[in-house]
Length: 370
Image 1 (tube, rainbow, N blue to C red):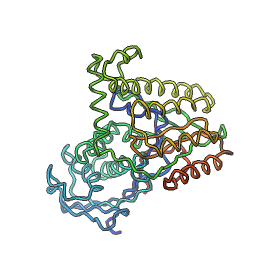
Image 2: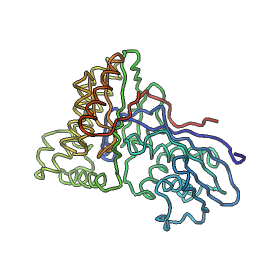
Image 3: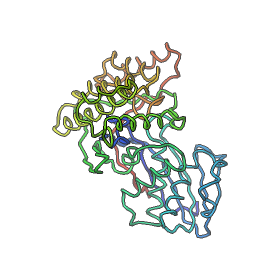
Image 4: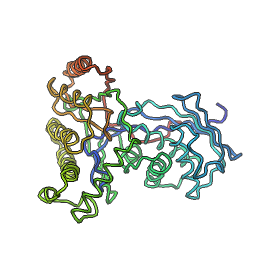
């Protein structure tokens, strides 16, 4: 295309451990995936905004910078709220955009709990940064991408997904303290130990905009208020959690507090160079907590976890916001085929769609391709 200026890629992510802790001011441990969303972008000088997606070729969007007001978004395709939200947020923050044309192409399965939405928003954000505002920091890029999803899509996410897409590096997991913003790149070399991290996309897309995700945030805030702390991250003693009289709030708080401990434990073991097999039981404990205390798992996710463990996985758990999506399993490389086939057979017996399976290797964060 004559208007092409460059191509940028922002990856999806898988969270090794640390689900639903980011909006509780806690700790997370994600890594970038070797698949993402590519944004091909070109400069326009006429104030026009043109956006197309290879995954929705019939939903070509043509508008103007002036037309991207705070209202009138209901007539736009849902997917377009992400890139247009990023454009709108750049302009709202005072960055001059004379116009832009975007073509988007994504490899991350939508609704799989692998942050396809953050990859989409971040790919657009880094393209706009490089084209129009090179001094914008990584922290602001993350905030712009998160704001686009919060305000213009209506999903009250934390900063986990956007931080992972922007900050992760190849061969490492990213330890992030959400409260302080402190980060650490921790080596995660599974090949060295003869291990694979498998991802099973169950084919049942999660739907965070349906309200359950937002409800969990409300419940966590209520639990923190009842405990007299700003966020559940501030709870240090499990005995405090058990003081909550409301059993539902007690379960939600128990997950968040225990999950923060699990993140710290896994980060420390990897930091010290332990054999990654040692983190398997912690990963599985995270799934049990998400299933029983946070109540965001599904029958398909549970079947994938239980079957992978029975077939020899060292640990397995659901990833992402829940209510559908994907499962990760830590397995011996020589057992990859056995575990994969076992899960596929279990899904067939249960009447579920055949899961998509791929290897997760810690990959580079968002960057320019050309």
